[in-house]
Length: 372
Image 1 (cartoon, rainbow, N blue to C red):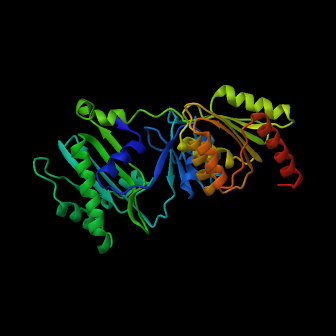
Image 2: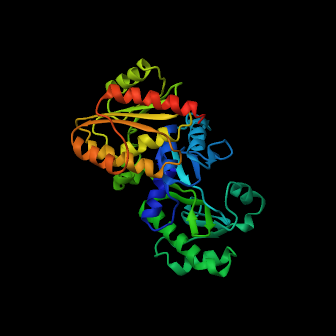
Image 3: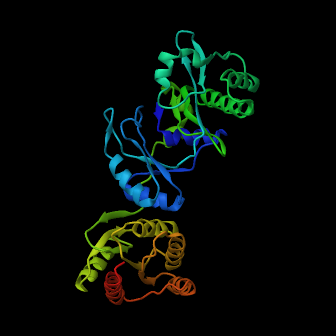
């Protein structure tokens, strides 16, 4: 069984191999929210179980959340060698100084494991194997003996890397072989293994586990299950983002906006029992959606707690790149505590949905008049 890159990287990290910060997105708005949360340039990568995704347009860069939304929308749903892209990995963009290649697999002819390594990694490794095979180091560990760190350092030395890289590169080779053995793998691969100012990092990861051994690795199988998206988001043609905790409440809020002469820019249902993190995520989505001039957050707390809502709002606004006016209707469970938190943060709120909707439309008209 072959595992998606994000799952392989989780395993590699667990075994001590450095990786970049990254998170899985199932739809474009989630990619935008993750990019906003990370607050650094990112790479948006199709999660498919086939190679060649870079050349097929399945890997793109984004300097800000808006670009992340755009490229995620372009990649999701595309087909790469017959496989439809359903998930993305949003990952910090690395400053790459050099690229290497390391893989551990099974040599069927020799009937033993083999380590292949080269100081020239990246997408052209297959061509390198054909045109300059001497640049790929091949080493056969004895499967009946323990693979020792000095053997891994010897492979790094034979790769002809600078002396200061022999030890850290050897450490990663040794850990990769440990992954190969521990998880009964057919293949454990890093291509490219990149050198950055922070050191060596696995920029990509491949893990293929022997099917007959999966009964010993149920934790790996469970990692293939993706979480349901936390919020339901629909883009509309207006300029007032509407967020509510429940589809009915959100639709009612949209009706109130239209009744007062405004036009909704979004339908965003955060559902019942929304946590501080979900509120933060929802606001991060709409605050980075360019057509939005005003945000209307309509919360009637039942399972959802007003104080969690307030904390999520405060967190999202503190890190927001765009300053967008927000109108909050906040009542229900723990409403006094939630309202107190908003007051202390200097964030106005209403308890009436009608008044809040009217205020949102008025604010939007003011923003338009100011030419923002």
